[in-house]
Length: 534
Image (cartoon, rainbow, N blue to C red):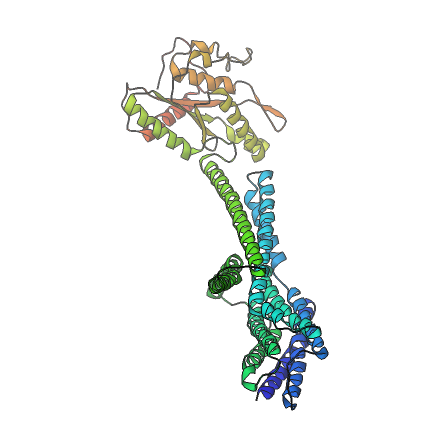
């Protein structure tokens, strides 16, 4: 029965593997051709198994012909390493996404992103070493130690050791491929994982049988069961095609997107936690060994130290990577906050930030009576710039006006662009005379002549004159000198007149600005004899 089962399953696996190889080409053909050596080797092994058990004195002691059976697992290892993956395409997409994400911040972020890739590679290497050392410890405790103490020497020892090492190598390579290569054909990989796990268990049982040298039929159940289950699964893995069909319709695409997101999350979970599976199994064996023998010594102790060192290094690297990620998140939050409260063209505060600060200033005014001055400024005939020189020139003019206004007022004053060609200034403290400058306008144009700004009375008149001084010189736009005039409206909260709040104060300033525009006063500065108006 055992011989018939092994022969039947091996023939089935060889036939399915042949179909899969015949239907493949390119890189798909390469890995399937190498992995197909497994079913072929199993068929030869089934024939040899049948021959031994039909003999009068069957023995499972490895001999020279068994060396040939080590070739097929080695070819399968090469096939696993050749499985096509999504690693390069995923890496390109991640790099493009990171570059796009850091584009507004500057070149320094790109360098930080590259460092993130370097740390990810180091963590992947540490995970691989944890898997290898854990599997080595498991194999040592389960097989190798018994093999060394069995008294087997010469070629039989080498072949038995080869079975144990190659079975372990198959499992280790499979785990590494699952964790870090991201194969495209996940259904085929799942079948390979199940088949190779059963085959590794079968090889382990074979080594145990070789130590016994001669056993009955009942003692070989674990060997032939693993082989009978694992080999057909490997054959099916070679014939299963990659999923390529796409669903039709909106609901189908939504389902595909949901499934793709779930699959990506599962792969990320595997990459994060799969190294802990063999590590956990090794830890359980170590605890059991320490309890039964009163401590660890020799090879198990050395491998336990290696695992502890690798685990510590991995956790330190993860902590470092998480700290860098936290810094990136905080930097991104600062960038988003800046973009949310500042004008993208001029860099000035936008309406949202201006209203927020004005409401805070009004609250402080009501509590302590601090004076709050609000200035609205609108560029006259700005549409002519866009119509004559183009919108790019208009943007250039807005940036130049914003820079002059920023330099005209103090650091504690808030200069904002409310939208279009409309600017605003919030002054929470009175302007002293020392902050005012002489108007640099030419004396040939009486429209722009202001005279001594020091003659202006009060904060509102001084703020008005600062705007006049900032706009006095023509701007250079698109290679042309372009004079700019502005209409200014000012509102003051000084306790003399009641007001409803920030919105009413802005309405007063807006009304005063449009009244100034209708009167044509524009950027003339109030003289010393004029009274301050709100």
